[in-house]
Length: 308
Image (cartoon, rainbow, N blue to C red):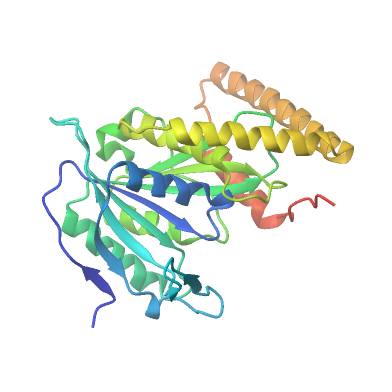
């Protein structure tokens, strides 16, 4: 019996597969929050799911017990579900979304990716977009940084003009990278969008990172998405963080150090770019910054700063 359950697939217009997973590549639950919001806004219709039994170690990724309003106990298993989110527009610019909202599996990643690829083929997907978020040495006082990379970008009109380049990262990776590589090998155009979250803010979800990522998804895919509620949540969240940090002199000094570091890196990057431009070289892409962050996380992941 197949672990993939497909209930129905209807004809879609210029379909795009959007993927986000809770787990290792979901700092502050930013990526999964974006997926949930898109499904909610677009009245997502569940069309398929992957049975968790073959892909999870339940002592590591544990199910949850919930109590319903009627007082009944319910077990919620880690899930990977596909939703069709129709584009409200008509005409050639319409792009129906197939959103995979899930939890990074523990086991059998190659089998898992084959099932995701099967859904994409059944839906006639033309473009794959993966969402992820990582913790890094970035201050909450500066605009949220979002970067991207792409594979086979020349094969889709939405990616050709963005300037995304392939990632050059080498090292431990997550299900997002495994899936994007598998899709690229199958000939699909693939883009990855990553948000950077301050490592010292442990609160989840982080609406500030999610709001910026939602805006980037809207820009990259040229689709209408309402960010008003998320933007309001981000403003309130930022205010709470500023208030908490202002009461801790040590935290304030640390954030100031991160700000100075960010300015120095920006200045150095600008000088390198100008030098390369003078010498006729190519400018570095956003993928280079993703590489740098992933390399940092691999070698030096810090725990969140205690508020005590």
